[in-house]
Image 1: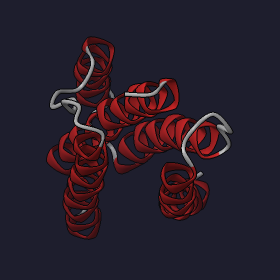
Image 2: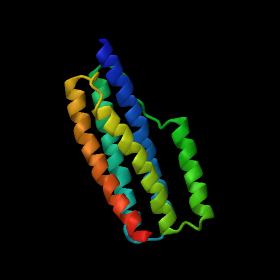
Image 3: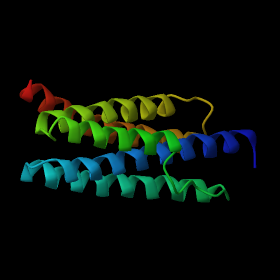
Image 4: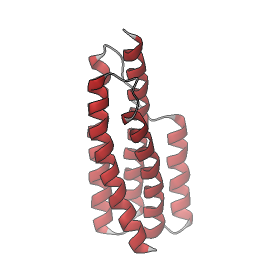
Length: 150
């Protein structure tokens, strides 16, 4: 495997962890909101993030490498902490949306950085540009909801 391919696998595996973290975050959010529309939206987004994760895993496999299958320890800890904070704040929709948007800020930045990485093979960059646009659109929707609640 060439150096650029090793780099691509490393970047993709990092994004897989991040994407799974947000899928788990959405699952947690769906469990902590009483708003039926938010519950459905969060569940759908968790599913879309898992689909995105599988797409990234397939790309890693195309290099003959093993894709990540688990979120990072830091992500697990963050999701547990976020769940505790939501419970302590009464699980208000505002608190849940605030936490979701924070996670969206993080994933948006990671995808943008990866999409701008000139050391990645062109096909990987093209895929990540499309993924970054999708993640940004979802971030912007959550951000809009958050601002409507404040």
